[in-house]
Image (cartoon, rainbow, N blue to C red):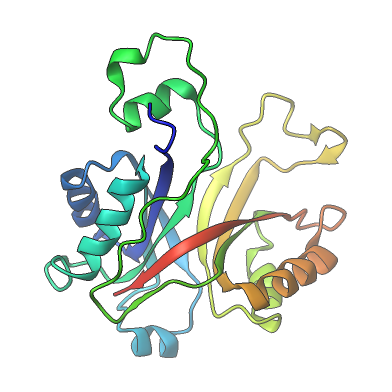
Length: 238
């Protein structure tokens, strides 16, 4: 594994039923280890009409590959594949700062050394700076905010997020899968049935959204929100 080889993630939030098209496209670009799940968008029907989205139901596709492969896929989605794929929503890439060594070697194509003792470090350098050929890809300081809440509190948390500046989000049904008893996690009460709210926000709104949700729906509240954010490199809207 070369010192400059790094791994990135590519994520897509598209209309229900369109995820399979992206999985196929990702495969042509050596995007390995794709995962697909279902979610529900929170945007109003008026906003869906403006964005050209027909439904609030979402397919979520997450894949991992070398930074070069991910950068090239983003470029292709913005140029040669634009209009060819029946996929409407938002696609973006994120830095992976740490990953299992064996998985990293598979993703980077270093299969001959999988059994070796080489350590897999974090991302030391970013990938290429390939320019976009289209008009809808933004290279800005955006973040993906992930909020895990107890089931039944999602609407209230999303309402708070909107008040703090969020345009909308995607809700993913989940379950607590920690090794410890679901009732307690290091002294924190944990409900087994969870929902994850994914919100893409600009840097100037990120902290306000996170702080407001934490104040109203933090760990000591019935929602028991756990909040984090991940940096986004590029956003492609289609």
